[in-house]
Amino acid sequence: MSIKRVWVEDDCISCGSCESICPEVFEVIDISQVKEGVVFADFEAGITDAADNCPVSVIKFE
Image: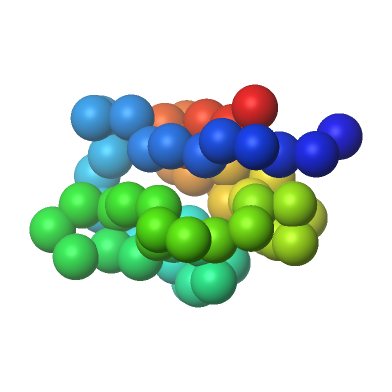
């Protein structure tokens, strides 16, 4: 699987879990967001781990 798109849905609670798991892709400012210019395929394990560990299941990818 090659991840081409990653996003965080509006129900994010800004817990910072995604950023601590995969800081190359995610950052929390006011809410969690995906960094621009990232080659998602390089961080597939971190992205899927962050999505699996999100307490409100708002990290999506395809």
